Length: 479
Image: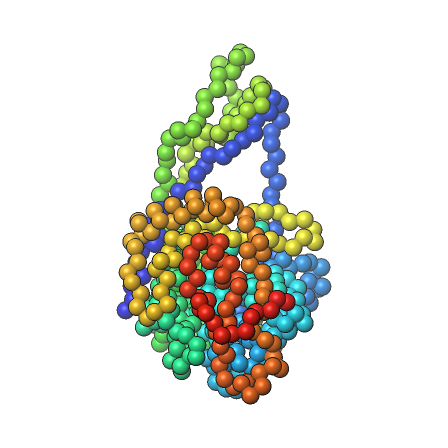
């Protein structure tokens, strides 16, 4: 049985110094910090192509509560079906092979009314998601995180892993190619160790999306209530085989505030408490000691703000000294929420309010930006991305983190912070919409090269292993 290494939960420290601008009146006026406004986030379980219905439910909630949803997150089984040929690349019985409504958003007939970030599940047009392995726009205003990915929405860090866990596929490369066989049509959506290792190197995240449930997550919620809804899970739960082992490893490593999932077609909530990490105290080598020329009291008054520096001199940039050592913080929690599929009277939508690090003006749309650390991880691990069945050994964690630290400097210098995704990747229609399939309707499509993947790889200076060097597919058309 695959064993997920516990070293992924290594201690991390966060710098506590900050740049402070001191004016000559700083001694009489204290800087006021305003709390960032909240974002209202909607989360959908399994989509199954029912975009019209999901957006309609969101708009009904907005009208009923006089509010505005800023972001929609979808936890897989999205079914980004562009035409009937894509249906031949989705692993479902024939009776479930239906176009549904995504093609309207793909062709431009409709536009997603809210920024939508999605991951893949086990019922997808796997050929389309392979085009966008590193992530990209599947339609206007709908962004796919890739087989694994991390982005920022107004500073809110969102990471995710597509697919489901199968032990026999976990340690292989991504060897599946079009046309898929009955076997590779299923293994293509199995999560790989390559994705999990890269995600484990993130320093943390606010929200994590998965399709699978983390293994043993049911033990952190109301198991008896779950068994009333799904009594046939009793044996799996008792044996501890329900869920994905590597995802539980990621949950403990990343400690996200929220973890959302789907797949099981039932709503379930749990809370995972994380033991506090040791606090490391270090001297601040940048601390600046400033002597005041004016007379000062022998016993300076106590201040509530440990970072405040009292000066009435000229304007100067200083580094604030660290505050007194804090007490051990309380345990952190991850709130886990699994949601149902989009059907009447089913619990398939959840709404939360969460603080956004970067405030938005009323009526302003959120901004989707690349995550610098994730870009560094992608660049560092690019040589280990295998499109063959064989996957060579990965570097150990210590060396991997050194590699990422080095590439992070490259990313900062060559790409910069807060780079908007749209400045690199723009939605492009690569396959035709429905109605053009003709006699090829029931056949798998060719592999379409995707300019978004080319642009992402070019930005990072890595080899594009997704797009074929030469392709007989027709030239993509912008929409």
